[in-house]
Amino acid sequence: MDGFLSEKERQPPAPGAAAGSSARRRAKPAAVARQAAFDHWLQQELTRLYGAALHEPLPDSLLRLLDERLPPKGD
Image 1 (cartoon, rainbow, N blue to C red):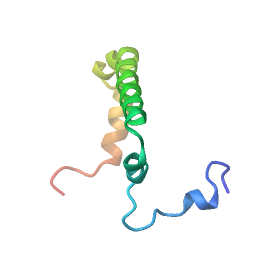
Image 2: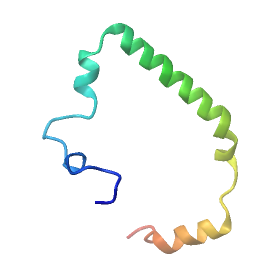
Image 3: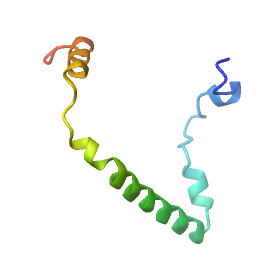
Image 4: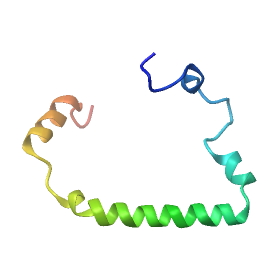
């Protein structure tokens, strides 16, 4: 065991069980609204904090590493 996941957490989900779908169906409207507000706030904060980094060029060393690991286009 690596200390991150228990055996139960390592098990694949039951067939037809979508992650979180049943919880959202059972959630009360106020809870859904709070979750939506939090999601919106989180998206804004992440964009504010890290949005500029998304427009920075990738370092050449990372591009070389990706070129070595990815198969050529057309294969």
